Image 1 (cartoon, rainbow, N blue to C red):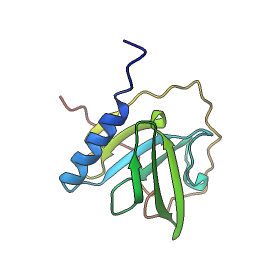
Image 2: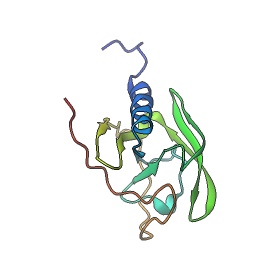
Image 3: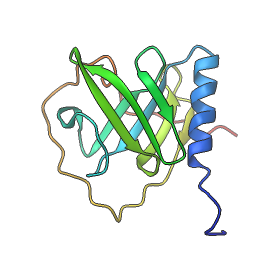
Image 4: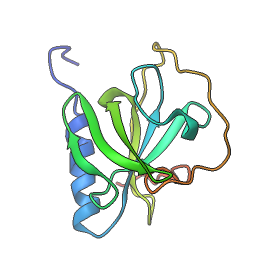
Length: 135
């Protein structure tokens, strides 16, 4: 692989996000949390968080080549979210699990998980992804 080529991950994330929205599905992203990820830590479980990135659940959503950023409500409080694109483990439709998983570089350490029970937010209370391979 040519090291000078940009990653395909942001393009695939944007495409699957658009596919979900166009077909009435709710796009979720599974994120491997580390120090560079800005999310409400109280909703991180096992070093991961699942976020609803639909237009209905977010404000000012931007899926850039380097990061995903948006504002969302967590337990009624608006929070700013910042996820480096290389920390996205998967994007999938909540309703049917169709989507795509991505490898994560484990060289960057993740913070210890905080187990504070169930996430009760408009954007975070999501089940673990159950991805299906689409051929």
